[in-house]
Each structure stands twice: as C-alpha cells, then as structure tokens.
Amino acid sequence: MIYLGIDTSNYTTSAAIYNSEAQSVRQNKKLLSVKSGEVGLRQSEAVFQHVKQFPDVTYGLVRKGEKIAAIGVSSRPRNIDGSYMPCFMVGETVAKSISSVGNIPVYTTSHQVGHVLAALYSCHRLDLLDAEKPFIAFHVSGGTTDCLLIRVDKEEVITATEISSSLDLKAGQLIDRVGVMLGLEFPCGKELEKLAAESTAKFKPKATIKDGSCCLSGVENQCRDMFNKGANKCDIAMFALRSIESAIYEMTACATDKFGSLPVVYAGGVMSDKLIRGRLENDFDSYFAEPAFSQDNAVGVALFSAIKDGCTF
Image 1 (tube, rainbow, N blue to C red):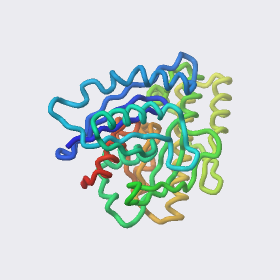
Image 2: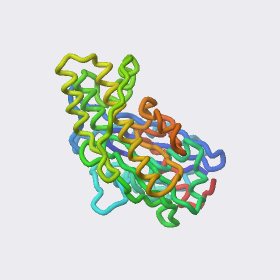
Image 3: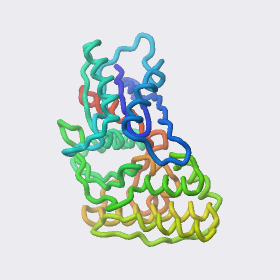
C-alpha cells in the first residue's frame, strides 16, 4: 500500500510517497523562484508557480502497478483558527481532484503537523506516537519560530499547543534578510551556513527572552550595524546563526523547565543548519531531522494519511 502526500507551501512544491510495507519514503520537490535581491513572493505569484511546477514534481512518483491507498495534503499553515494561506489551496485542489477521479480517501492536515511527522520519521522516533506522555517539538522556518507541546490525538494524530514563539522576526526571516544583505540568493539558509563556516570569530550572543519567547529583530539590527562598519561577511553570518542558536537554546530550556525533561524534536528548514544545533544536541534529549526532512516536504502529510488509514509503525 502506498500513500501520497502533497504540500504546496511558501516556498516549495512537494510530493511524496510512503510505502507502508517497506516503511520507506521517496519524494520530489522544487523551490519556487524568487527574483534576485528580493526576500519573498506575493501569494498570487506563489500560487501560479505551484500550479506550473506541480506536474514536474509528481511525474514518475507513483510507479507502475502501485495503487494509492489514501492521500494526505496540507491545507493550512497550522491547526489553529484563522490559519490560512492561498498557496495551500493548490495542493488541496489537486488532492481532492485525484480523490474524486480515483475514489481515493483524502485527509487534510496542517503544514506544521507535516513537519513534525516528517521529523519523527527521519530521526526514528515514530514510537513517540504510541507514548502516553507528550513531547516538545520546534518548528523553525521562515514563517514560524514555535516551541510546541505535542500530544497524541486519535482524530488529529497529533495536536500542537504553543508554548512559546518569536515575538517579532522569525528565525528564517532573519536568515534571509541577513543573507540578502550580504549578497546571497533567497532562500539563504544553505549559503549563509557555508559563509559562516569560514569565520573564526567566537561569538556568544545573549538571547532576548520574554516569558520563554524570543525576540530576534535586534539581531538583524546588530548584523546591519556590523555590515555598515565593514565587518567580514563570514563573521556577520556566524553572529546571526549563533544568535538563533542562543534563542532556540533558551526557549528549549524554558520549555523543559516548565514541562520536565521531555524528548525535544526539532523540525523546519532552519533546524537543518548544523551550526544552530550546537549545544542543543548535548544539553537536551534532542532529536533532529535530516535536511531533506527538515526543509519543506510532503513526507509528513503522506505519513498522516497512512496513520489515518490505520497503518501502525
């Protein structure tokens, strides 16, 4: 039995297959195109590009002789009231169209749930879905810097309750703004990490934390000040990433102080940066998805459909 997952987020068109017998996945994805020097897309342009890219992303994904048992799709950013982005309508429309033609069940969830499930698959902790105790998950990307308390839920598979977040700039936004300032192409995560690796500077920035949540806009101002004063680009990149590391570390510490030493799963594109992992790997019961499962992908929503269809791990 195979399960199809579809995710049309900002800024990636993604499709994935989960094979329940082999417990294996395969996926295709393609970034949306952003003009040089810009740090984002209008939703209308994102929708257009998803529609244009989708046939290439799905071509050949379902192999000859395979039958799709169910489809999972992300229809919204998060499972909270008012969470909406037009780009997710593309994936939902495609999923429901396939469903109606092939008489295949379709299950909708959030982009955030997809990230958490993909991370659990990647770090071999799907067993947490059978545990009675909750666990902590981070979703750190261009649109979120969220620390979440995750509980297993029969209807929704998992529920995510916000523990803390960023009170201003999101971690991914900080990376992209600093990266574009340094002349990198959007999205800037991989290139900023490469640039930071050239630095020998030893930064130990202190995170700004308020009731467990972080503030990152001041880091952008500090990076711009360094840039205007002629600091090495690699040092600016390193300072930005170390600042994010410090913020995520303090948010984790606040969450584990409040809820106990629960497992902590880190998801989202920003958490694929190895420089940011730093102390997190050593000081907490932490688990990280591999980059292919940290960045936007459809693996988690494929798993969601499999679980809703009755699959166990």
